[in-house]
Image (cartoon, rainbow, N blue to C red; front, top):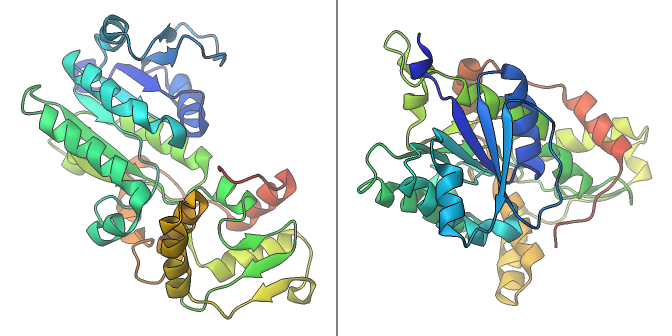
Length: 326
């Protein structure tokens, strides 16, 4: 197929963040794209030197800068951090006005097509609004589409922050009897998946399922493994060379109680509780965290392989704990 059937010019907003860094790492070696990094003037982030890479710095409040930066781009990948999400709406507007046809808004979380799950998690609402904004803009800017990237929790950071209810530094674990299997991804897998997605042909009459058009106004599902909380705990225990008796393990609480407690805390302004609610929904049986059937189909299209849970957990335990986001 000709180059006209593939994306060529891709802009990244948030390229120095976790997802952006991984995506850039995997996009550059393909030699398929000219990549433009759109960044604030105040940013001190550094990027690889490459003839395929351009860095455009300016103010996100400068409409002329944004128009110039987005001009000629086939797609824009947004990978904004939680605290920068408020900037995304005006950037989406600017990208649409500049003629961008494919916008990948900041997702990298749960299954955005699972309405019950999305409605239950407040921090998913800005993501819903971004997709709605793009669809509304498409009435004026014909051909504009979005693609959502579902990753569920990142195994790397989630484990090191204790967000699965397992604190390997303190040897404490709160295990929930009503927890079920859920998907989780490493940032490496996310970046590779993004690169493979953007490398798909725009259309493919012989294999429509393997085209970018298949994902128009839809989600792609990335996963490294589908696991239970207990399986993660056992992998951590082996990585630390410990027995369960070496841990303080609590099994009295349920996911439903966790959800109720999170709602109470959020009503009092506790932002960390909002993160807890999200993980309760990921891990709870039947709450929406298991999208394995969808992931298997998309991973086949993208050529992604399931990763080794033991190897990933061992690596992250050796890297040490991290502080939570707030």
